[in-house]
Length: 546
Image 1 (cartoon, helix red, strand yellow):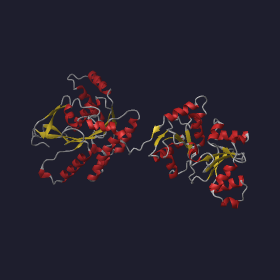
Image 2 (cartoon, one colour; image 1 turned 90 degrees about the horizontal axis):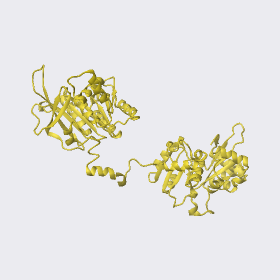
Image 3 (spheres, helix red, strand yellow; image 1 turned 90 degrees about the vertical axis):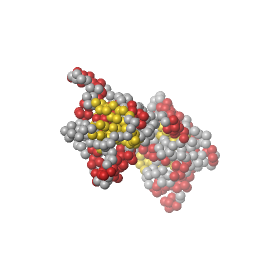
């Protein structure tokens, strides 16, 4: 509607009474809005008795040029007594319940032409005011056998949908704030509601759809209707009807996210019941096939922590661990909080090539080109200890616009700013819970390395560092889905050349197989290829392992 103006409720009643019934101001004030509605309606005239220029002008201003007279008649659209406006009645009852003779409007919406030549347009009048519940425009046409009912926010759109698609279309009066309970109660009686809001009121349409949780409700998005109202679509020459019918078919089901039924949960339940899909994940390990017996598979929505003491090879193992998954076409994002990106990529190239003894520039170019074909991306953060978790989320969002990230690798969880500022176990718990929530909400797998030592020396149990480390271990065990710990045993006591033997233990696997606590997985490291070989042991960890 163009150049429309609204007047207050009192002025509306006074204007209608004085304009159509000839009553005095005192009589107008004493009459109820219901009486005013009946008076104005009884004095109204058919639209074919209006002057053609005024009717044409109103059709243009209200986007009604393509609405047929038969459609107006079905919706009981009439003209004001003096022929300067159109009246759109609203009903709270149906013809099939009370009959045609007993049907009376409970409210009126009137559009009158303005007499001001400087501001040509229309004046919108509502009787009673918008705070009073008066039903819907077109509700009298609803029948109990109607399968679908289209709900719109404008009378012209409702008339267009009914004329083009033959469906019962209602217009709801939109007001600020929450929708009236009587309005929602009336809508819940309908079998199937399709809401088609104007593009600029799409959020309002979503709010109405969410309020109708007990109704089979669908919503038409601006993309589905190509940012057009129904009246605009009907005006398209030669294809308006087909377009409106197609838009209605493209509506999307609105469901309450927190509610579900057995019908919706069948496939998910089957995955858990038979132990595949949700347990086996999207892939299994190829290089580290020994992990498949314990972790069962690589699953989205989980948090995995790889811990160990200082200089035990956590990041080197993490690099090959992530490379193994990425080689199976799992999109991987590296978040380098501490490790230089160039050093990381060099390690990945060597691990992918299994190291060539006669290394030259050509072989490097060949293997670098090979690994560059993998769906692996790198995010570098300049300041160690100043990177926030939300910074990682922003990178994920930017990358998700063009690529789907399935695996997020954090080279050092303790390099997050939240970790640096953590003062107690509660703060640490928030970090792990936020990481796990991020994995679940983004439907990805997060793997991070951190200092997570296995402290077995009972003499140091009261040491402050020991107590702090035990607190970290407890928080990690609580929130993480999988916890892998690299244990180390010194083989030589020479300070200048200390040899280590590494073992891998699985402290926790939420949905996997057996834990590796009583025995161990031996980690054989090849310094030439920077690759690990995992061998399952059948005895307890050697003494002196930490």
